[in-house]
Picture 1: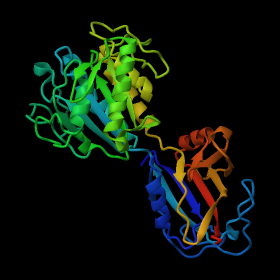
Picture 2: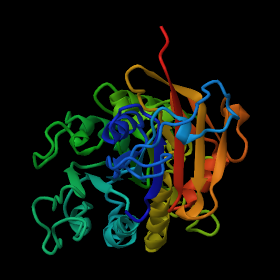
Picture 3: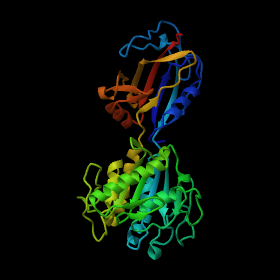
Picture 4: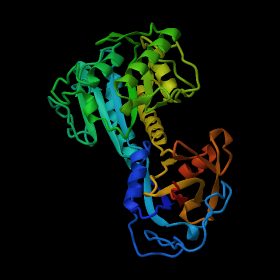
Length: 431
């Protein structure tokens, strides 16, 4: 994978197999994938042999404190393995308004979703999936949408009676979206309460989601939110307060649907991008960022500014674009693709593995060694007690998870060949 970052773990695990250590990291790190590449090999000296076990000579002082040096030769056992932390997978959900004012916008989506969106994300090496929620068909005749190959399996010439489903890359949940009911349809189709017109995904489009993937929503509409669904009711009134209220309610309803997919209020696992009827920025194709205010001004002849969608974008760190710039959707879709790539970066944390039977990991002895470009001069990241103590070149441990401090994380994420060596000390359990 082009965007992979290589992390070398030197875990002091008495008698534990390398595969077990990799499994512990994979099972507990919910924000990245971990593929162990190392394997047990001949015994090395001093823990230097990749995939081997190190020497056991010398003395190890488990009470040396956070600033004490760590001597792998003095540890009970040293093993090493090379691992790959990949960028997060992404599930991208497009929600397409099929009302009669959307024909030109839908055509612009059809012309750009493969060439200026999916191909860019695919070229980055990210494991991605696209899900479209909207009516399948002709944009000219029925304001519906037909996604062409290579993303789907059809040329759309002629338009087939069913979408060109292309697992595992592309799925289309065929259901009409009206001017005001996008949010209600998202929730009601999620578990199949409103079924796909062709009978796909009888349990809803949730069947196509992956729990380990970041969810990216892209809303396309020129109107606001007024809808009633199964147990839900939203109305943003095209106003600031109404938009805030609807966004807060929808956010809570979405998170309640499945926290394993969408996260929770403390740590959301979704981002909401909006291509809506708000006034153009300057330049016109420049997105509004999360820190910028919600607007009530519209672009062109759009019926509404989509205040609820704007608040969802602000809450989740998404981008906002004016839908009136459909002639420049190539630029818009490239910007969203860039945002998807940025949002999928690995998080700089890794779980502390379970210690071998009869041993206790001495967390105070943990050291993190960062080697730039996998071949530069190694740098030692020091351990601090907590996030508030973070400084440059530092990390902390919270709830048995090693977390790089912000500046350290930035450095590692920007270095596609970064190597991280993590050394652990262990000591026998004393009854």
